[in-house]
Image (cartoon, rainbow, N blue to C red; front, side):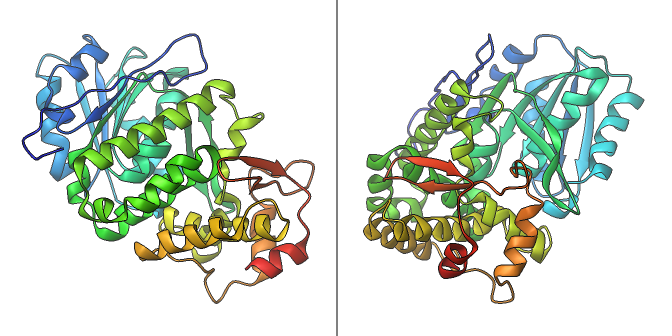
Length: 363
């Protein structure tokens, strides 16, 4: 897509409830002033963003909202370390003090942290308010903004306090990726390649062939990649909204990744960086079990290294550190840690039958 190409709008079903919600994907969707009013009607708004994203895009959103509705603005500190009960309280208190009604709509303008906190605040506010996701990072656009998982962190683990609460719409403007740092953009690509590994072999190979275009942040390639990721996630969520079965495969790499985030301290590594290492570990175990060809592991590592993503655990973390951290993971059932492994390129399975020796050999 050239820089002068027209804006693109894509609508995808993305819910397992009795309603669907639109996902608008394209270049300049934030400038399309009709999208937000169409989703909102005449309802009040609680707009939540952070100190990094707010100065860049808040004015565009406020312009779309107009001056005829009540708008509560909340500006949070930036970073995973602020995905806390304190930030949750700040949002809810601001909405209450502004006398917002249950009919109001919370808008999350930012990355995954803002989206998760805002969605959880909406789920809890007056026992449930609607919310809209406007993700501004690649990771949030392809993953956390779709599917209705909302949460905050706890010192004992990541996303341990939260709710399933679907948005009423997602607005993805690919132009926001132009202001992302190389590190943040790369972290999003870790979640992107995950979809190929667990659900679409052709997409995985397409990504390996598209590294130059991705490095250039080519608009056509990026829009195509985001759309495919959203399609895959929407399909999986449609089958299993509350992660009672197949949705768990979306956690590929996350059990190990969350352990890294917890042990190092939230925010020391980006979520996508930790997931990148988690996927390498899980793929090594899958190779050792004969469930996936070693060429897949080599392709994954090559892709991650191309974007300077880590492929090995932090040197200070050993087996005991991983096992201790993973025991506190929210996916533990009946005292057993559940892992997502590959059972072929484009397919994944969930198992609690992974021996510590297998993990040790793959770190």
